[in-house]
Image 1 (cartoon, chains in turn cyan, blue):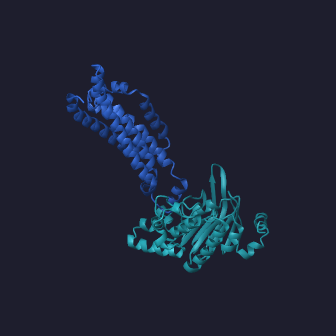
Image 2: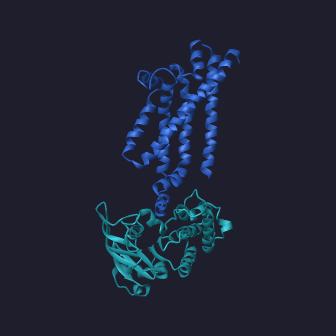
Length: 241
Length: 205
């Protein structure tokens, strides 16, 4: 059973078709990169996976169950979400931000603290130095690492990444991409990763889904994707050199 | 200062404080929840904010006059005064609660939803703490205004420092006018300074 399955998903808002008949599935352990220009519907697809949006036609199934049947709060807490511009709470310390979901789930304060320290360590942020800081006291790259640690805190089987590295300088960006690959190797997580950067897609994806104006135009592994011949794929590949 | 005034000063200042504190507590208990409700019911915004704004345009003496003949809430005395003061204090509290919550960064709220927080958790843990400095600024403005407006309470038998002022005006006694006006001004300054300090503390956290 695939972890996530989109079945003929359409999404329409205000008479505008954002997604048209999108179908794909994500197996455990995969990293599906949804690649596309701004407005191609990739973030919408991501928000449908954890029930922030629901398809106007078709259905999205997570662990074999339609997102409409899931308890909306349970579903969101089972899925880690790393957001564009991070969305850390400015009035929470790093530790409270990272420990948010386990705390909501009623995990004891000691256990949360331990988990937070371990995650910060894994993300390359020494906990004794960073746990008491506020988000505004961090660099963009550090904030993004905290965002990833927060998404991992409840040990969710599935992670969603919405252009998490888009606002970072190229060096930090590559560092974080490398960290993402390490993380995948060590934790065996399944992810859906949204980006408009074809280089990032080729580097991180085990599969690449190319979205064009709400349609899934190509779905291929990185090797095949390099040889894709559709117009949009060529446009993206052309930006490589 | 004249001994006859000193005797009354403590009592009238006490009365004044009671008027202000009761009116402000009631205004906060009504204004903050209503402000929260406004962020969730867009249809109510025009009506409630409009009502509160209209209240504020009525001259205070006239509002006291309007209230006197109304059964249950009207009449002569403290209750009528407190009701009028609440109506004045409502707008800044209501508006600042609404604006404070509505202007919390949308990305922060969206990430709260994405983390699986319930709307109650988002309100208590995210929106209210982030809006707190703005809400407090509204409470501060309302408190300072209420301290001033409460001096008119004496006109309808509500007591407070206004008693000195009205008596002083009637008997052309400057010392008596000042005995009412100066403590009221000092009270307003103290409230402004104290609440301003709390506000700065909150916005730093």
